[in-house]
Amino acid sequence: MMKPTSTPRGKGPAKARRKTREEINQEARDRKRQKKHRGHAAGSRATGSDGASGGGNQSKHKDPRIGSKTPIALGVTEKVTKQHKPKSEKPMLSPQAELDLLETDERLDALLERLEAGETLSDEDQAWVDAKLDRIDELMQKLGLSYDDEEEDEEDEKQEDMMRLLKGGN
Image (cartoon, rainbow, N blue to C red; front, side):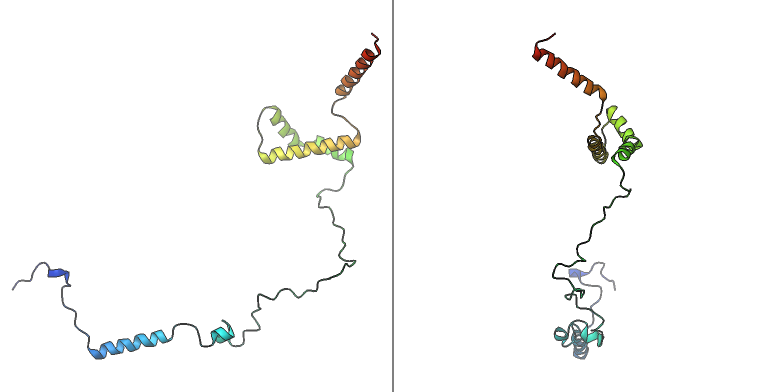
């Protein structure tokens, strides 16, 4: 007796034995019992999700819809009008002292030298340099100073020349 090398019609090597009606009924009962225990507990919609499983845990879990209980003043009161402190790291300096600090700033000098050399600065550095130069301009205007005394001299000479021309003198 020889066994065939290939099985006809792709069936398995041996025929599986048929289950009896009693075994099929028992498996069905087991499946039904497992299905019965699926889902939420009875009454879970009415009592909330934590009520059925926890019992007395309702006081521990706060309702997220309820906000803060701190009282809020509805009218204008004296306490509300607070003066805001300026959030400056350094104490207020006189304009001259602040100008001196800005003129001796090493970072500003280094960045200005890089700009004069033709380098391009990052956006952050460029914004910082612009802010510092604007502040220097403001301080110099407050103190009544100008950048170069030479420019003033040239402007004065130009005005004197214009006056001579207008008067008709040499």
